[in-house]
Length: 629
Image (cartoon, rainbow, N blue to C red; front, side, top):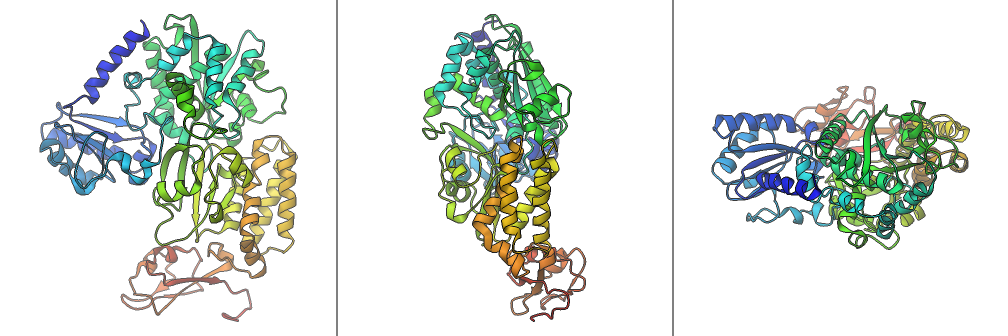
C-alpha cells in the first residue's frame, strides 16, 4: 500500500476521534498520571457514564503526559458544542460532577478547570498555550505527547507521522545525512556531538552488516524525559530510528530500554506490531526496497549502560562495562560491526526534521545549539514536570517563569543540570543561557536533561554527597580512578556531613576530583566530580561551616543540627507534633510546643510542617558542650 493511502485512512480515523461534535474524555495515564491515581479516575468515569446511560456516546481514551506533572491527574473533556477543557488534580469523587455538568449538560466545571484547549473560549479560564508553564515552550520532541492515543498508529500518521520516513526513502542516504547536518542537530544524550557527522562516520565505515541503536537507558535521578516520550509518542522515536538505519545502511535496529519502564516497553511493543500491520516495518517498506527490523532489548538498570560501549556489551550478553576507544562504535560496534547510537530525544527530533525540513528545525535555538531541548523539572520548584524549550533560553526563564520558582516564601539556592554528574549552579548564574557551551563554562553539563532545583533548606555538601553516593554505587569498577576515586570522594563528604571534617578536606576533594575526571575510562568517571567541584566553587562557605563551626546552615545534616521551637511565634497548631515520627514534641493546642532533645532524631519534619517559621535551626552542641556555650 502506498504511503498516501495509509495517510488517508489515518486521517479518516483521526477525524472520527477528534472531529467536531465528538464528546470524549482524554485521561493522562502515563506513569506520572497513574502514580497520581489516573487509572482510578478512568474507572470512575466508566462507571458514571454507565450510570447516566452515556457509555455508547462518549469515548474514553488514555493519552500520554503533556508535561504538567504537578497538576496530575489531568483530564480533558470535550462536550457536544466543541468546548475542550483541561481539568487538574482530578479525584474519583469529582468525576460524577464532571460527567453530569460538562458531558451531560454541556456546562464546564470552571472551578476545577486548568485551561481551555486551543480554539475554544471560556471566560475566567486561560487558554492552554497561555499557561505560565506552557507559554515559553516550543514542542518538537513532545509534539504529540498528551494529544494522541499512543497505542493508535493512525493518530500519529494523521499528524504527520512517517512522512519523514517516506520522504527519506525518496532520497539517497547521503542526502538524508546532509539534511540532518544542515539542521544542526546535536546528540541530546549529553555529549552534544553533531548527529549528521556521527551518521556519516557510520555510513562511510565498510561492512556488510550495520546496526542502529536507540539508547533509552535513562537512569538519572530526577529524569523522566525518555520515559515520557516513549509512553506518549513511541512512533516518533521508532521512525527516527528507521531513518537513521536507512541513512547509514543498516537493516536492524535495537531499542535498549530499562526493564523498570514497563509502560514504555508495552507501548513500544504495541507500536512495533502496528508498524508491521501497516507495512512500515519488515521487507520492502513502502515499496521502496528498504528492509528493516527493530528489536527491543531490556536492560537490568545499570546506570553505566547509558555509555555507548557498555550498552553494546549488554546487548551482546556481556557484562555492561565500557571499553577503550578507538575503535569507535561507528567503526566497530555491536557484534564488531559499524553501529550508530542515538538517544530517544535525538531520534524524535530526526523524525520531525525529516518531515518539516532542516530550516524549520534550526529556526529555534542558537547558532551552535539549534533546536529545542526537553528538561525534567524536579526538586524544590512549584511546577514540576516535563518541558521543551529552545536552546539558549536563560536558566532564570526556566526556573522562574516556566517552573514558577521555589515557592512558599523560600529562596532559590541552586539548580543542578545534567543529572548526577552535572554541576550545581547558584543564583548568580541564573542568567546563563542553557546550551552546551555556556553550561560547560559554568562547570556543569547539559546531560540528558535532568534539572533539580534546590532552595535555602538544601545543604550543598549533602547534595554533593548524595550524587556521589549514586555515581560511586553505579561505577562498573573497571578503571581504578573511577572505582577508587569516587569512594574516596564519598568518604570525605560523609565525614564532613557527620562532623568529622578537616580543613584540608576541601583541597583533597579538589585533587581527587581532578584525578577522577582526567583518568577515568568513560563519561561516568569524567563527570562524576562535577557536583563536588561546583559546590566547592560556589558554596565553599557551607563546607567551612560544616568543618570549622560544626554546623549545617541548611539544617539538613543530622549530626550537626538541632531544632528548637520559638515560643513567641508558636501558635500551638500541633502540626509539628503530628509530623514528628518519634513523638519528641509535646504541647497542647494554642500553647507553645517544646522539642525533647533527648528523643529528637533531627529529621527536620517539624520545620517542614510548621507554616509560621517557628521552628529554628541551630548547630547541635558537641558532646560535653553546654547549650549556648
